[in-house]
Image (tube, rainbow over all chains, first blue to last red; front, side, top):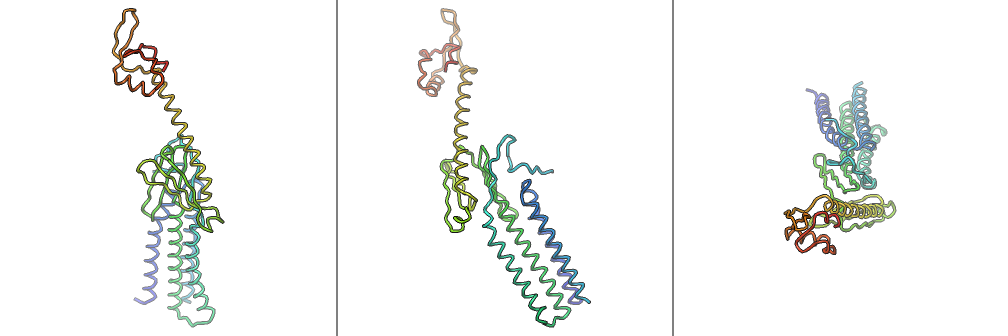
Length: 66
Length: 242
């Protein structure tokens, strides 16, 4: 297996762990936040920023290949 | 199970009036926020330096940099969220009946403790830092009756106002409970005759003998109204005068 493939595999494993671990703070905010407070805003911002970083990283990885 | 987002804490009663939901002052979270942002910034500056000054990057090193940047940013993002959960879910709730202290410790520990307004003995507010003075935040300490641990609200906005609110609600609770006690006592006397042993007297009125212990208790409770009792005998119908 090439080093690049290993790197990608490691990165994917990290992302899976990241997604699993992220469930706990999101659950806490969802469960214990009150109506109209910042808990839902925080959840949405966190998910959006995380998805942006992950998708940007894949875009750059693909662009880097060429 | 559908969550009721209107409920502020476990055991909240339907008619319980929420006066204030207090969180720590935003300044408490700022240093943490700056730390995470600056760590990401340092990393991004390093990447910018490498690419701008024409350091020759191979495809492999480019990929390593991209992945490590992403990993670093995501970890910082998670730390930010973790900090936010600990900061934001630490809540103090003041109702007309009690004070509820909800402490979120990490992601898996949550402690909810409550203190009834009647148990409060003393409330003190303290602002003891330059930022606290400028940004109006500080601590409120509530001393409790008995062996209970004191309640401490740390780094909350406008501590003097909060302590005033707690004192007002405490006085109101004391007032309400004493009025309730008085009305309950009088209604007990109106409608609940003291357990008696019925006998008939010569005039035909039904009179009742009161056991000595109960009579003494009632006399103690309504001191100054002893004249309502006859010696060891209480006429039915006179209880209402108590």
